[in-house]
Image (tube, rainbow, N blue to C red; front, side):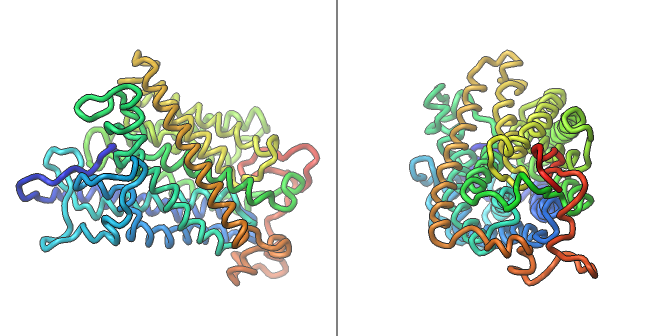
Length: 474
């Protein structure tokens, strides 16, 4: 996604480019499908007594964020780009400037934008829709870190506050011409200079390594620490309740991710085609990297491991997909899969309960993908003779994203803990959130309790297949 994707309208009356518009309509629809896919991916890895609650956390995020994005989210993120109005310190744009998308419609219908300044116009409304889907899935990703134990109402309130105070500002800073972009007022320009209003070293985040994955992964870590561990964490096996559903969810995520990455080019052109290929290459390599680690560490290459490796590869290639070669994407992907597989065991060593390994997959792979672009970018990467400047700015934007998400989530999480409270009661957690909160159960099997079904087994494992610490019981 370009730093300033929306440019002022041309003097002459623009004409819509139907091919580019159709491409963006398809891409936005594919990214929207990713959140139901994530719901299945997470739901399959959750215990059967809380699977519906897990799925509802993703669908709830769709509802809350979808409404907020139309009201003030787009204005906060990108409201200054079309007409050149100022933002607030490079951190966010005026939330009331385009409140309710009021400025996007005129007598001739929705206004058009020219993403590249070459006379290829698309409706700004489809750009809004595309960006809306990114905001939705970023919030939904966080939910995997706190599965099985939080109040649904508190989660819904958190979703609205967090997307407003953390996601929208970071999206503006990276993609909306703010502090982490290649604009003249950005950090890169201040460090390495600018030419004609553009930073000499452009930060690379093509489709959301910082805005989506580092952001969500760090938020997940903070909430896992604030909310606390599930009862029985580290001593009882908490196995995935439906592995085929996990695999189906991963497949839907992989499909939708082509809209996520290739769609961020905003046009059906040569670079979008390369992005598609790079995304595939990195994902395949990451799956293999994860399985190799599993085989040597645990003795088994698991189905859930394969699905998780797919997601780790997709996460890592997201920021770098427009800057790498296919071979570089293979390297990025295999390292991402191995790193993420190793990282999922950190929660036992460090003592935090990241239920579905959001930290290991999204934070770790997101950091590697963002920083790895500084090594493997074909034009400016260190391994291609580009020097250290690209690597330096990639590291800076990654660390700043960690800081923004960490501090913002901590403040919001503590405020909600002191007011609404995060945890359900111990009885509700033990019996299952589905029945107590939603009045439903995922499975109606005679003689089998929803609170027991799928919660045991012969081999104690984590959600992603790694063995639990020595002494844990099934």
